[in-house]
Length: 455
Image (tube, rainbow, N blue to C red; front, side, top):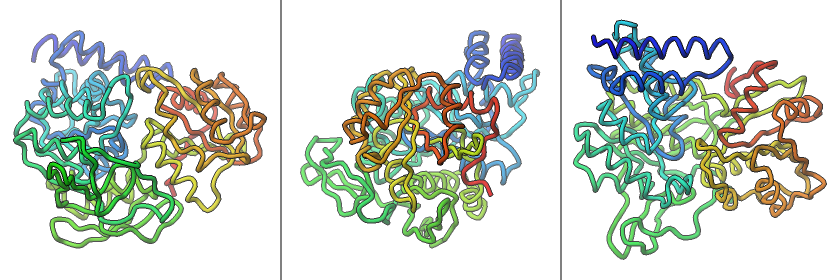
């Protein structure tokens, strides 16, 4: 046991304790300080342990929470971050908190959500048994100038861990193309059913082949650029899924039931999600768990009972006003939120929409232009607009048809909470990472959050 390793764990634990006492989430700074003391702390605390890493631009947090629930249920515990911090310093915090001051890990397992860019350092340090890659979209154009940039980071990381088994989305041509660049074993997952009712799902008008740039053809599409694709020009084609969702029914407000084919075996599971895009998360989680060797009954049970991440469908009762928090991160993901909301029996009309441009958000806000706000907003919508980039948000909603007199700017988060408390109808908050976190910090000072799916 090196002195540096002991000191790094001690610094992390002490910083975490102080920050939590101050009401902070305390996931980044403790790990950052630990890494300054011992730059190899992630590698050292990963040695000899079983690890699954989940990455991708959409769905990795929900997928991670499904997987960690199954691991905890099956094996009694795991190192994981309930707040979903996915950069290297946050993961260092997670591993240090799961360790004794003597450097012994408390859990045999680690379930780690990783930012796509962070995989370059995390995979070689952790050597996971399994890497799950969710859908890859055009995301944060200032960080990833093309929609293959994130993929290329992931490929660079995988080339350093050839023994890691990959779990890839067969329906995403960008994710699927990873398999052609690496020697690793691959397990495929996908959807073989329609995730949305007719007229709700949105699809990219034209999808260019990631290999040759020519237009793709689809025999079946789910949404955005996803589906059973083929390229007539170069022959790049969809891979058959080993684990596939083949049907979805028994749709309720908060749940549904899925029919699944797992390596040729038909199964059926309840899932406590209802949005179409979450079906991909369920498929990814099942595939990852099956690949790890988790019993299928335990994997299926986790889909119905996992704990959702903060900011995702949390409900606050703000002095009688039901307030629902929805996290938006990029165009494709936000469009799926829109799809879900317009498909509800009573679509919302009262909103708080906030937009920021911190590093965690992506500095560019251009992505909101491609969101189909017109499907959700209109003359009937009433919106409080906030966040540092409220002008961009207000201008986009105005073009969507929200009248100026129905929009009000409020940039103070505590004041937004007071405004919500004074409202007499439910409020839906749609905001990106930095703004929803800032609002939530104000909310939890007085109000207790409830998981939307909790009984």
